[in-house]
Structure formats: C-alpha cells, structure tokens
Amino acid sequence: MLYIFDKDGTLVGGASNRPANAPEEQILLPGVAEKIAALKAAWHKIAIASNQGGVAWGFISLAQAEALVMDAAKKIGADDYLLCPHDDRKNHACECRKPRPGMLINLMEANGFSPAETILIGDQESDRQAADAAGCQFVWASEFFGG
Image (cartoon, rainbow, N blue to C red; front, side):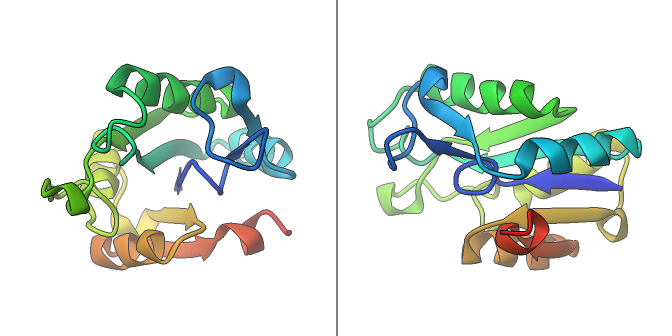
C-alpha cells in the first residue's frame, strides 16, 4: 500500500501553535512516529502531499517550503513527497493543489500504485476531496493516529 500524508496538522505542527516557518520549529504530532514506524516495518510506501500556499502569499519562500516538507519527510522516513506552492485565491489555480488530485496522482504514478492501493491521511476537507477526486481511500488524521 501507498500511504500519502498531508503535512501540516496531520504529521507536524508548529512549536508555538502556528504553522512552522523553519524546520527547527516543526514537531511531529503525537502518535505519528510510532504509526509511521509500524507502516514502514510492514513494507508500506510512505509519501507526503502538502499544499504550501504561504509561498504564493509571500509568507515563506519556495526554498523555505521545500525545506519544511523535506524535514517532515526525513523525520518520518518518507519515500517520496510533493508540494504545491500555489493558492487559488492568488489567481494561480493548478491541478496539484488539493482539493484537486494532481499531487496524489503524481505520487501514485511515480511509486507504481493504483488508487485502490493508496490511502490519503489528512486533516482538512480539501484532503478528503482530493482523495475522492484521485479515486483513493481517505482517513481522517485524528482517526488514523488514534487521537
């Protein structure tokens, strides 16, 4: 199975109850490390698909967003990741920004999995909508991590 995780609010949070702007501010949420370790021990593939609209708004640079997603990927030992730096409200609609399925489809294709073999875990309605659009399963992060 391919498990694709949203990043912010699903895998990590900021140390001060706001989104992290640097890797050192980003902390794994409770239960994440243990659950991911169990998935990896069972030979499942792990990926991250993360909207990073703060880039479009100028809150963080693309390099900062990439560093944050790479840090989260490293923390959980992810096999792959993608991020979308766009935001529809800034007139830059794209197929990769959740709730559209682009990142999920690209991760499935790159890793050789079908929608039937893929689960997206997220914390936002846009995550659920992206999973529906990609034809894969969806599980709420709160249910998946047991909190």
